[in-house]
Image (tube, rainbow, N blue to C red; front, side, top):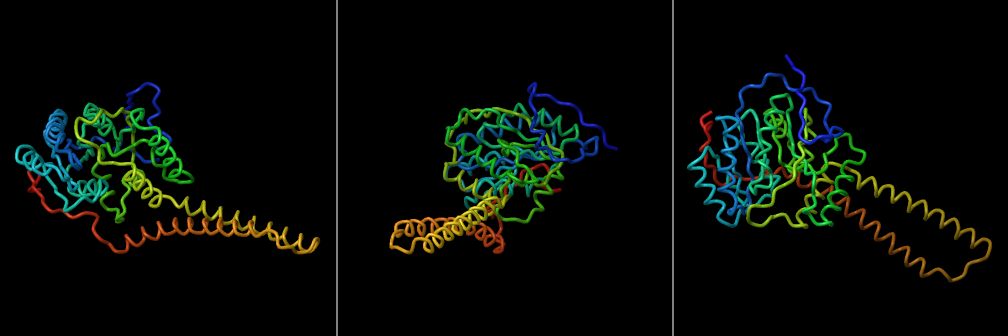
Length: 345
């Protein structure tokens, strides 16, 4: 028996990304008692990890006694490994140490693959994702939403270049697409077991998680939040890495770049035909002279540049195909310390 969704409010007047919500039915209610798996990716989080995991355990403990925390160490070079081992000995923690730095998308994939609860929480270890939103996420899950995700409503703490690039990225990736990726929605989210199972079943190696969250669908709700300042340490995301992630997202979830260059090629070809007709007519009417060599040289360089750019974009897509057909694993686990209460299940 399916009940209607309960209304919810966080900020008066907020639209909660209703235009990005999949047309999916609510979950069957009532839910089973909460058994929560928390996935915490960590890369060089020595300064934050101990305090954060203890704070997370307290916050989750107010919602349920049945929970596990999965720490995924993504090739940290500081003392994150030692801190995580200590936590695994004291708290209901499962600690996964990857064999090297595979990237956050791979770390999230590893954590999701090892969850055992009927709900999953993805949250960063730097205190930027507010723990005070967990009760609201829980309530929305109980009300029938299968995925509840946080949306950053104020990016004033970021540079103008990053804000402009982020806006451009979301406009490009959502242009002409049936599946829309909600802007400013990150990895801070609560999901039902069946959402986690759907994500785990996706076979691709090049995993752009923000796109995959949108692709699997299910009933979703957005919660606006303002990120806290990092409690300590430095972010490992540089503009170069963010640019690489954006390129991965574009080439994984849209063919717009290929279509754009197809249109550019058609326009260039049309202009070339018009210019060729004008040259032929000019030669027939006024004869042929030796003028026009600078125009010819400039035209060759322009068209050569356009061709090289289009080949480069095509190469990005071919590179993704190359990575997929090799079928290498997304990550490798070097150590697995399981102190979860469900380790024998």
